[in-house]
Image (cartoon, rainbow, N blue to C red):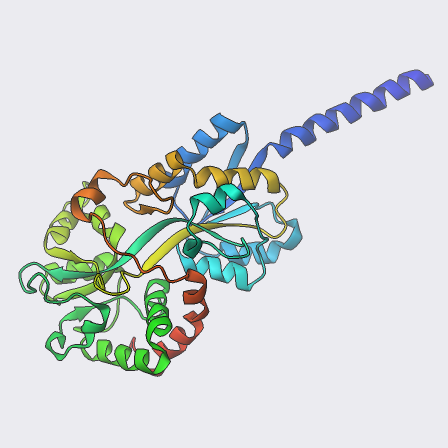
Length: 343
C-alpha cells in the first residue's frame, strides 16, 4: 500500500470514529426509580425536540448503590428519584455534581432544590391525614400535632416509622419543634395506633374503609391512584370512604415531598443531561409529569390536573427547605428506634 493510500485509509477510519463519537454524544443515560408510564412519554417528546436519545434503566431500589459501585465508569448521567431521601442519599455518598442553570433556578422554587445545585425537585406531593367520612367529623382534626389527642386512641393507622415518607414528616416536626417535643409527639402517635405500623399508604385507607381505624397518614397522589383505579375497583370504594385533610392550614402549611433528579458525579453526557433537566422543569413536561401520577408541578403557574382541582384545590404548603428537613432525617430515624415505633 502506498503512503498516500495508507494516509487516506487512516483518515477514513478517523472519520468513522469521529462519527461514532458524535452519535454517542447525542444521548443521555438515566437511572430511574420512577416508573416507565411516567417517564417514557416525556423522554419521547424530549428526543423529538432535541435529537438527543434517552436511554433508561428502571428499578425500584438499588440504583444509588449501583452508581456507587460503578464509580467513574458508570454510564449514568442522571438519576430520577421518587422521594427526597434518595436524593439526600446520593448527595451524602458524593455521587452528584452541581449544576448552575438560570432555567432551573427560574422554574424550581428555592425550597425544592439544593442551594449548590446538586439536586432538583420536579414534582411535589402533600403528606395528608386521611379521615373516615363516617366516623370523623369535618374539621375534627386539622393539624399533625393533634394526632396525639387521647380521643384518637386506637384509631390511627400508618406505615412503618422507618419508611422515607414517615421519616421526612418526623424530620419536619423536629425542624419546627425540636427533638424533645417531637419525641413526645411521636410517642403520643404510637400510643394512639390501632395496630402495629404496616403496609403502604393505600393499605391504611383500606383499613379505614374496613373500620380498623379512623385516621391515617398518606401521600396525596395515592388518592388519585385509588379513585381512578379501573383494574381494582375496590380501591375506588376505599377512596370514597375518606376525607382528605391538608394539615396545618392556619399555621405553617402541609408537609411536602418531592420527586427529583440529580446529575451524576461522572456524567459522560453532562451537557445533554442538563438539557434534559431543564426540559423536565419546563411547563409542558411539568404538567404531563405531574398529571399522570396526580402530583403537583413544582414550576409556579403550571396547571394542575383536573382530578386534583376537583378533589384537592388550593392549599398552603410548608415552605421549609428540604435541605434543612433532610438534615434531620438521621435524628428522626434514631427517634423511631428510641420510641420503638414499629413494635
